[in-house]
Image 1 (cartoon, one colour):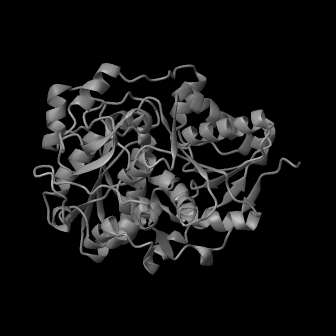
Image 2 (cartoon, rainbow, N blue to C red):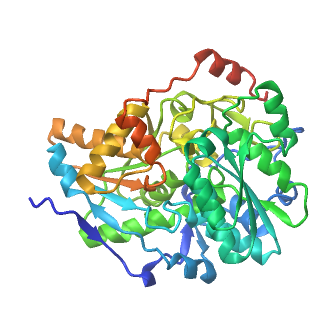
Length: 454
């Protein structure tokens, strides 16, 4: 067997014309979001101050296919269709009979999968007259992507970046500013939510839940401003399905089909992007696939969280959504995969987990960095810290095949490169990284504070 990496590439004319909506094929619908006060299902009017109506309609849609506007596809053409690679060098290194494919989203301008939804959200906001977008970001991939998209569509962008990542990843902040966005460390003194957190803990590392609270608060203050979210909600997951739809066509070129599909999970968007189209085929009578979600052991919402209604933010400003959650007040340790430091999981991903349609695995930080370095030394691409989790999951799956002798086909989404995360790798090589462990008592306290919903 040659160890040459094989790339399967489509041309821009084969960019999907529609996003795929998994809700249309589910055996039972997910639970509706609830009003935080009345606990009754919410209507579009509650979301209207935050999102343009087109995105609200996508959020509640049960249509299988949602047309991608041509203006969005025009921007996608800058980097899509993204390549699908056969990782032969990694296969040889692992001495596995498995075939390993990865869909590489790091070729986007921002270096990750996030522009797939950032471009769409910026477009719909521009059409409906929005002048400014406000958002949160963890490691900075989402903030960079929205900053890039805002520049294309002439929108102001304010980004509240989780403080620990703001300090760990200064080049992400620089990239956002290069695109014209304003980047603020969260918690900040700019909002009531931020000031309340700092009053209790002046040295707060921040969290995505806190940053969401700040961004939502700021978005509610001006009529020309809307909020943009980089993961979790249905419309965000919908936009990411271009990844899996392209991968299906590329695997046809390879004459192959996956037995195992993997994605890393923080809020759920890149996982949904690669997995939902394959799961949809299965639900419509197609071939069964084993789908694995790979999350950090330090913030294990799918493996340790409770499936319950909870707030999407720390201050309790959002509607209640039913999801796997560690509790809105859970404060994850300051590990380097900042994009995965979220207390909850996308309601749609949580729902299919409850239906038994996917499995979840949690990995420690050092094992993930070891996997990322192995991938870099065999395939030449150094993954973002978030993406090392799925690399670890794929390597484990390949080693399972080695042990069993089964020649399975493995597909995973390499959601971004680590070029802005080199300090993390520097710390790893210097032996400064440790496996971050959350406090079990803090977790139980956070879970005990979940909203009581009948």
